[in-house]
Length: 297
Image (cartoon, rainbow, N blue to C red):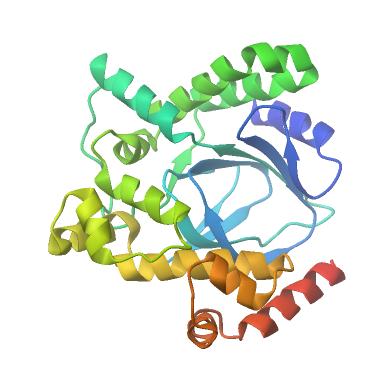
């Protein structure tokens, strides 16, 4: 079991740049053969594993550059900027995107605690918990290779996809980012539930008081704990999520006003002001630049 074997499995099944479905829900392969600068994105709960090249993510000003030595673990929806700073035809980037299912991860976290696998104190900076990098270990490598090998047979994928995905989840929960992930998916993590609610209701009015009430906390306590987990104040997080989602829509060709409404803005002028403040260009200018970049590549 090796990263080299995983790379061969991915390369054999990715005929073009971008994402490729595997037939297993939530597991997608990706390839990049050109440099892509960091652009707004929203990472839903996921693990991103690179076997060739390097990928970059920026969360609230903190840069994460990772390659085959470390995989990225993001157990809660996060507004980021992401890119492939060193990809080229000579040095293509190959990787896997594994969505982390909330229900399954929570159930497994609770099973581990029931079996006596108690959470240990987390090492490192508690204020930077939106994303963690974790070293590849033997269990993660073996589980990922076994999962991707199923792609050789549609029947194997249908029959064994679920248990092998569960095996990979278990390797993640036992790995270097395991405590971090289990804290996010634990039954008592009110902040994670609050973030999930925000992520799925961006088009509706969202107040900090409502978020605090959902979490069962006072506004002051909620604000402090939320910033510990995400590095951002709640209102800043909501704004970043909305603008990141809107930027992705505009880049894909959605009209500016439609994108603004889709993420909860009722005032086009307010949307334009806040978008320009975050990205340095008006929404229309930014969208035109992204379309030009895609056309050039």
